Amino acid sequence: MIPPVFDYHAPASVADAIALLSRFGDSAKVISGGQSLLPLLKLRLGTAEHLVDIGRIPGLEYVREEGGYLRIGGRTREAALERSEIVRTRFPILLDTARVIADPLVRNRATVGGNLAHGDPANDHPATMLALRAIVVAQGPNGERTIPIDRFFTGLFATALAADEILTEIRIPVPPGRSGGAYLKLERKVGDYATAAAAAQVTLDGAGTFAQVGIALTNAGPVPARASAAEDALIGKRVNDAAIAEAARRAAEAASPTADRRGSVEYKREMARVLAARALKKAVERAGGR
Amino acid sequence: MSTHDIQLTVNGASHRVQVESRLLLVHLLRENLRLTGTHIGCDTTHCGACTVLLDGEPVKSCTVLAVQAEGSEITTVEGLEQNGKLHPVQEAFWEKHGLQCGYCTPGMMLTGCALLARDKNPSEAQIREAISGNLCRCTGYSNIVKAIQSAAEQLRQH
Ligand SMILES: Cc1cc2nc3c(=O)[nH]c(=O)nc-3n(C[C@H](O)[C@H](O)[C@H](O)COP(=O)(O)OP(=O)(O)OC[C@H]3O[C@@H](n4cnc5c(N)ncnc54)[C@H](O)[C@@H]3O)c2cc1C
Ligand code: FES
Ligand code: FES
Image 1 (spheres, rainbow over the protein chains, first blue to last red):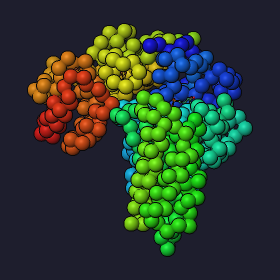
Image 2: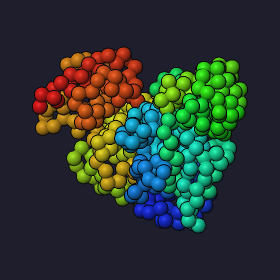
Image 3: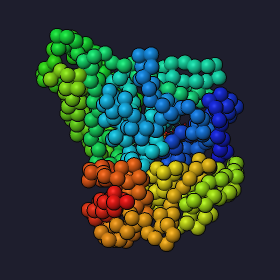
Image 4: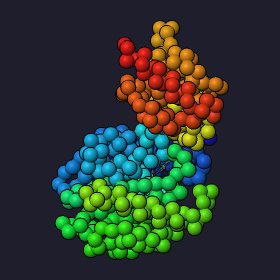
């Protein structure tokens, strides 16, 4: 399969890339790892007159802690996230997530920024970033702006990024002590999108009650969103199985999965409930709560 | 549609080629450079038959544009043999019956090579994880895992 014709541009800086995007408007698309975009073009499910490759811009791949945030460069590949020492030791939820995305070969090219910018509710990073209350940094012709993850996903395959903006960084607030997170996914085989998956991030206070909670599901509707009713069920509650079960029930209730070859609506909702409960338990465990 | 004059190194030899922007790396290798050891299976980024090493890392060449590979070093299965001698991974696939029809084999071996270049003593679980993006419809994988373990042993002795 051969992609439709397009012009290819390889700018050497973010400023040059933005200038190209501004010039071509809607007829241009950013290409990063290309692991969603190229399959789409090859299947002729999409077109672009111009591809602006941000892969030649130096300095966009990094994972570091700075100013109270874990900062992930906009072009950081999943493989780099997996190998990052700080991710391995301090953000196991990110490692959980990266490891179940596609397969190791795809992860050598696919980027975290692309995973969010694609706006695909089947992708795994959106739920995790929602649970972590991440902030997306975008650069455009008028400079830089930050977008809270809760306002980033605007529709099916649609995000708050303008056509002339580039996602340059993802910022995750470094959680306080007694915090933990986990991402659990049910997939039919390696490389498949989630039948159901759940991200949970919790912070406990000294008394062993839930002080902060983030919960989100993957493939649970057209637009990735936090399961806020489920979060509310836990805030201020002591850690116990009944509270976790109630939160998981609420998360599943709010989900609107669609039936496909991965399963029926009922099955997916039930799996979402089970995974949300397990992810919460694992998050509590990692927070040192059990 | 733009065309581009690109330079890339394939199996140690530098090439300058003119490519259409939409040309995929796998077609550049197979059709322009006549290196047909890199196979096309699914053509949809699933099977890994088209695996090559791009600057040492295994990638699916049906999902990389040739222009994206400008300036990089590519290794295909044809580049594994050195001075008429098979690579230890190739020897091991032969010895341990790590292949039947051979369709997945170039990709499997290259993924195995990349793993062993990073870690000469991977566990069975790490080997299975590393090759999880390469599908084999014949062997049931067991002999592929054994072949990579055997190659690792060879490489540790050198
Ligand atoms: C076989 C296969 C299985 C997969 N399985 C999974 C899975 O299980 N879970 C999962 O989460 N994903 C999966 N993916 C998707 C993969 O993770 C994608 O690579 C990822 O969604 C997009 O990242 P990319 O860097 O490749 O982006 P690209 O494909 O380059 O771009 C995707 C979209 O995002 C835009 N974009 C990318 N980067 C930026 C940026 N920095 N600024 C502005 N816009 C940008 C592009 O314009 C494009 O519209 C799979 C892909 C394949 C091929
Ligand atoms: S042909 Fe490239 S992954 Fe199957
Ligand atoms: S040997 Fe036939 S597909 Fe692997």
